[in-house]
Image 1 (spheres, rainbow, N blue to C red):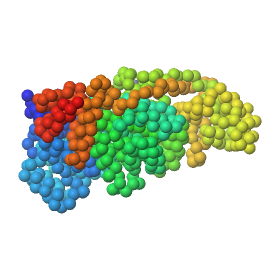
Image 2: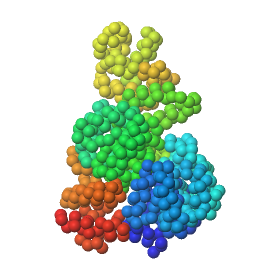
Image 3: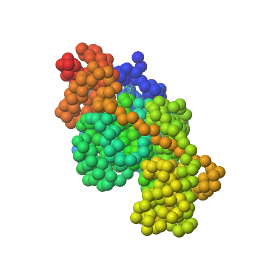
Image 4: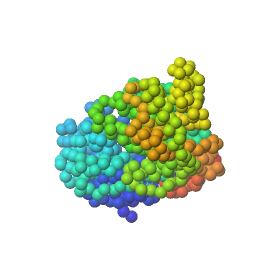
Length: 600
Ligand code: ADP
Ligand code: ZN
């Protein structure tokens, strides 16, 4: 047995490596550099933790996630690994204690915030100790074009210059081809071995539906498919975060808000509750989430349209790191398109910047409106080809395409007439009123009931018309005016639709049958007879986590509890064979677990 495999079994309690883990780990153990692109939940941590344990000295992990270092260290300590961190949250005594442990060779892993490397005393400290490797986590933070750029990451090229003989491993879950090239260049990893895994997350079910009553839609999702599950709900603004969290709490769902406008202490407390307690729903802006390695997030819901596919994929990727079934759900509507186009028009920065934002938005809209498999489209965005997945909404209930040329002509000609004949511009609501022939006060006052297009669209409902407008906006056949009022104007491409030379394909959303699951997603993936034990194990875990003040998943992940519920071990030896039960945890919890199983 190789040293790496033995550490995997004894310390982590796993039987075999996943994907390219074995090769990556061997490369670093042998002293080589590696650049690892692997999706969230793929198992990146082991790729540097095991080499750090096998090689002499301490593995230095550079991570931007100061707020999570304590949990990372706790998780390792629970496995019997000697880990510590150095960052700005510590006082002098604490820092000295960690430094002394490092110098004495008593640390397997040491987490460092990147800014510490600009302090000369840190470099001197590292020079005096023995370094097994450098791991650069969240390596995409070095990319200036990506969405998480951290200036401190640019300094990391010094690792190679200062310690040319120490192997480096850089890891990220998010990289288009452009970002990949930028990481390679800035971290000087041209000579490293590159490991690019499939970005697919097969256990996540991708679903995008049109937004009618978003809060009710969200509630239905949570009640029917995810009762008692932990999850994240993303909203664009602080106000909608607050409103959504209040609504969920009123409905009896334990939800907490998180956004940059909250006190640091409140934010910290909410994050810590989300990590520590079972079944909390975090309602957040995208300020929340990077590095959250809670493995049992069962759903990620977006109530507003994300600004880019990269952001969306990274946010949804926080679901289901443990590989168990999870949901990525997005509700998206006409208002999202109007609002985002407006935000781009009003954004600071030059024309090139606005163009980039527009490209990002267009790619996101194309994903929302696609008739094809969502996953195929997502993976293609990251340069990976795949086949229809069978686990996304368009695969499960294929939407129909329909010929929307005539409705598009009716709508566009209304916009044109208002402008040419009356020199007026209006938003979608009023234009739809004209099309369906509603005598609203505004229609009557403006005499819009005398337009030749008044009432010519009565064959579609308001809701259907909103879908038409949304899709025309998404396809660039209609635009939001930059006056800040959300009025609609035609585009250069509209002409082809109006003169009949360009057909318009639209998508009709299928009616989705309401699901009637009443169990949490993980429980419903278990055979019925294993569910009561699984629930008892979860209760036991909550108590154990509370007693020790650590997140529940540090005690055991859902995947391990699932394994126990399925196999009902009666002896310590049987328990030890379950994935996720290593030596230290068997020692700490073995007897208690056997009692829980036997009590059933
Ligand atoms: P990433 O950092 O890539 O998002 P993690 O390192 O957090 O992923 O791993 C995700 C989950 O998978 C963790 O719960 C981890 O313990 C588990 N895991 C990783 N490698 C293996 C393996 N070889 N066998 C079983 N479970 C694994
Ligand atoms: Zn699919």
